[in-house]
Length: 394
Image (cartoon, rainbow, N blue to C red; front, side, top):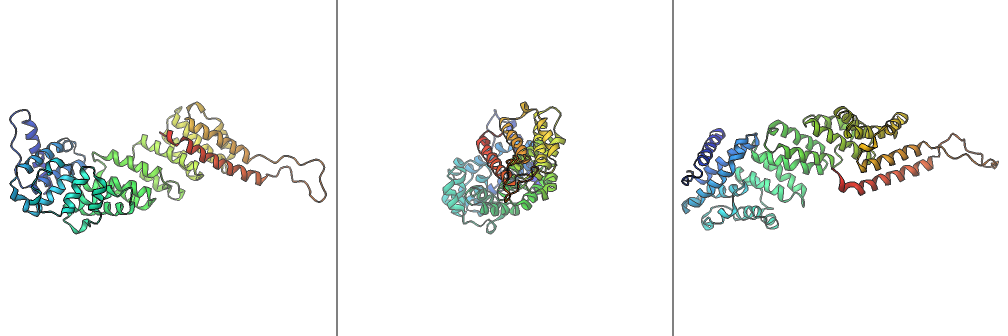
């Protein structure tokens, strides 16, 4: 049924566009709930990558609003049409149109009507109060999915766990629609912030499977990147292969950027195994003589010098072209080099005259207390550098 509705809706819009500038076209015919279904069909086309649907749905929203205003007051006693008003609002409909409708005739729960109106008019606190206790699964799914999506947006900052639960509801109530696509986009960031890697992976794969061609796919990948790099999700070397598999779905340039961000974050947090893995991936993706290649060498070299490949890693760091590093990476490089030198520094030879009770230390022995203090100081410096430079991150 969706395809015929989509075709009909698109034909409606095309005919309206064709007559623009001439005589004012007659409003499209049909019950309000039928018109809203046509709107939803067009929007579902957007989720599937239909750019024509994306370009036409604003005109359709306007024409549906005109039809609402022209409708006889008696049609609003039909609960399906009352629900259509709420869906219309939450699908991008104009609140000024809805305010002109005969509210006393519209058969719909006042919490839903007033909450939807408050949300689209930007009265977020009022919308939260009105909609918080609404259980989306207890109302018709067409409206319930839309309400759940809005609840996910309203509570994303204040009650993330509730927001995630409501976005799950939206996906379950309206699968295969723009509502599900939008719920996936919003939920991926929240799940990343909650550091639930299994669900992060599940949502990513679900989006790729169903909506990779969506008009809004770019927004999803931006949220994916933020969720991945501003949490600890990518810092466990035991699941690095799974991270790499997800990143294979991203374009080459974005994949390189993400590996560099992961490598730097891992270095700053002392996750040297991940630093090396991400640095090596970035090396494979970067071009010769570029700033990205120098950054990749820096992160890999640092991970080697501070673990079991000191000589090779130190040589890699010394060979860097510092002019191609950002200021924050140049500062981090200097700290890393000093740390690598200090870890290998032997103690000063003991005084020539030694007490019989206190035999001299072996000259080749490392002063572990001094090295531990240096490691602690370097970790503090790395943290300070991160705080000083975080506002200048690309």
